[in-house]
Length: 500
Image (cartoon, rainbow, N blue to C red; front, side):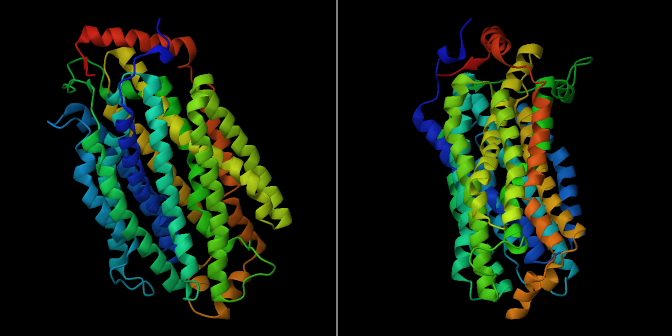
């Protein structure tokens, strides 16, 4: 029985780099939405909190239909240029345009909260999610058809996720950096300016890079188009939902939604947690703008370093440890470190002392983002070995849905916290001079604590829950090797071609 390390490699380095560059482009754009949409909706457009919650949840309900639909379309239909390759080209321009519209107000009155503002926001947000699905599901399904070698496939995903994470870090850093240059503006204008720059620049740069994948990647595994279900045959959805390893990975991914909060909640924590860098609390709008940038920068840099550090070491860890063990250890470590960040940070009121613990708390960001995708690919191999069917598109759509639902839950949790502790953004962000500074500095300790918990104990509990389903995941060791070695022979018998 051939071991994974001894299996033939198919993908040249240039092709792997092209895939990573495309992931970089996608990361530049996706991070706009995932990291800043709540701050933009709540503190720039000042939308009603309940509306934002409902928008996020209803959009995810639609994704529960939309993502599997995209997966089934991919499984059933191939084009002359490939089954998955054309979609990044077809969707690049619409995604770029919608990303800009998501963060650039074309003239709606935010103070009087026109109904048309809410209609505009709803249409753009839902449309962005639908078009993004049509690109994201095919793109992250590509490693499944680039190589039959599971180890090589895992490395392609890891490399792509790592470089894509760099794109996310650039997007996260840009509004913070711009914030220093607009610190002398009033808070409203500063927010509008930095988010407009972020959206326009990332969309214009990111989507052309994303399209590279369609021209540089080869689909080597030529899977036949899925046929209509024969009478008495098990349905595609049933095969997916009865694949125990896949469902455990999906369930674990949903429970890990808190990992997104380290980045998504950073601007909220920077505004309202009561932490400041310096010898005294900020007293003017300019000082507040600079402090928001400073605190957000500390949190985001810790998140980026912890995430990238984990990603860089993953290829080496793959050689020694099972995917599930890497996930469990990182999640438990993240939980403990999150608790320590909360206790030490809140008792000392010194954010800088928390840096080592925030770094460790961010490690699961890199681990889960990479390893869960590799585990889904292994589960699809297992399902093909067991049933004779490989639903690559639909299986990958599960992972896409998990990421979206995780982002939505993180966003909703942030907004729910605003409601629970009664933070009125309209009273805190409008105006000039010392009145704004006084309003922010007069927030209660309960409100400050609630905001700080969004990057500490809340994601920590989420990571602890994430680890639980993984204890029951058994696609490891000899069982995993048996699946992959026998699957190669089964593919030959079924006439599935694998190009060089």
